[in-house]
Image 1: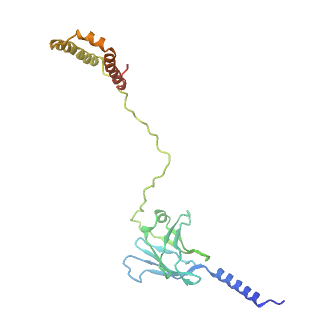
Image 2: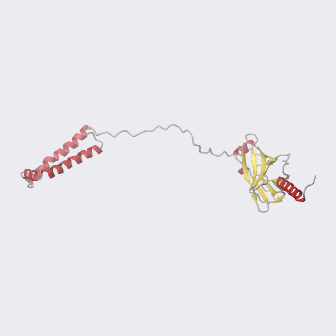
Image 3: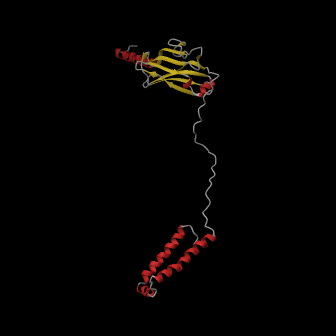
Amino acid sequence: MWFSPRFVQLLLLVCTASQVLAASSWGFGDATVSVQGKGSGVGGGSKEKLAPGKPLSKPITLGPSDTLKVVLTTQEASQPKKPHQAFLLLKDPTTGLDISYPFSVKDNGKAKVDLTHKDLPSQFLKSKTAEAEILIASFGTSQGYKSKAFTLNVDLDPNVPIAIPERPLRYGKLPEIHHIFKPDPKSPPVIVTLFFTASVLATLPVLFGTWLYLGGNVNHLSKALSSAPVSHALFYGSIINLGIKERFHGAQSL
């Protein structure tokens, strides 16, 4: 069977492109995990090399005053490159609880992350064991990377209790509230009411007596009412209506 040169070139191009796409994936290189104690200095503590897809056989122990450091170079298709996301994921194998710590990544792919006991939730301090995974991904067709790197053992100080955070506020059923209202207002005693009523009525004779003494003309009342009966009726009626309105809004029984 004979194939044209152009068809052969096209077939080779498709095969090459498929191989490139299949091989294009995210990973890392030059990776190490180290644990440095307080005051150990540069180069002190333990240090292990990490390889993609090959978790460490021995667990990494993090003491109360130690600092865990993971340093690596993110790569796309074996070339150093900065991804969109890079995390160190800690997962509790018993409960499945996990928490992510982002890597600090430079443009050349150099990345690092530091952890201490203060960075770990109380749940991880109680369980004392966590699986550490490395996650690297970005936009594009390259496949992301996610694989276990090592097992982390948390060594606690028996003399220092675990700090339990306060329980967060959650919306739910609250205890029943019993409202206690003020008692309804009551009228004063009858004796007090009669006393003030008598005091007001006692001033009326004094008022009319003073009016007559000063020259009050009672005979003019009939003439005034006959000349303007409507005006006088409205005037005195308005005074009576004001009194009724005041008693109504004062919550008094009519």
